[in-house]
Image (cartoon, rainbow, N blue to C red; front, side):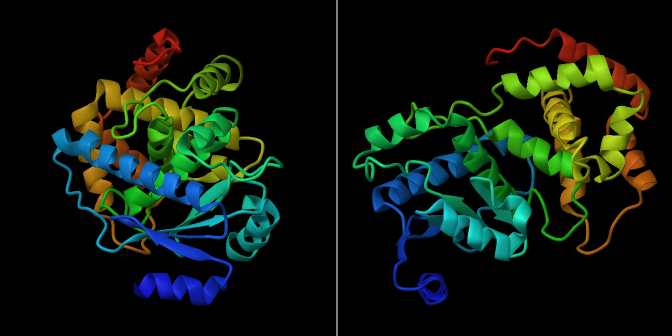
Length: 297
């Protein structure tokens, strides 16, 4: 209730607030859409904990309700996003803010025909915007990961880990009203881009540059390839080295806040977690991705 009252005071009287078991959602959009998003978030969070159950990670449900803000008008969203996180996110459909611990979204069903009046109508409209919906699941996964003990806010979380994880979970499941069956589904776009990078632009030792720093994520010329390689590496490690990957995630989750590792430390810790020979692992990774088919597994 305190969070609801705070959001109303911050956002103004045009925003309503609704709650689910684990979320507080403030919106000036179609309430039916906000309710539908709440159910999506709840299903995703349940599936997230179910997926990691076998790995004995030290995960916990978020200690406080998670917050989402959904704007009806893309222009309103862009104004808020620019002030909150900078102009780079204003053209997106949503983002997770580590600073505020919120996900900020825009109504993906908004169009000239008026509000969607049923779950079936919402899903019909979203089918035509599936790439945008994927973004929403991606950002919601970030929020869950940073509030469940998998990642630690303001610690040195390598971007290939956080982004690779969100991409691994991001395929939406619109067919189920209760479960979530698409975690880990092969992402055809990411797969193709990672193969293009591997065959045309990849330099020996590329994984070391991905692991060592965030430089490739900060450069507009290399960011798309960094995302694709992060998805591919995450997929490979979960499929082929799941126990080692879970242990590595546990090690990262214990990092202290506001202390940043050197590039050399990042690479050394990765090598120690996965057999000690990065060059050999990279060769195995490339062969695995070359064999991978672009169909669900």
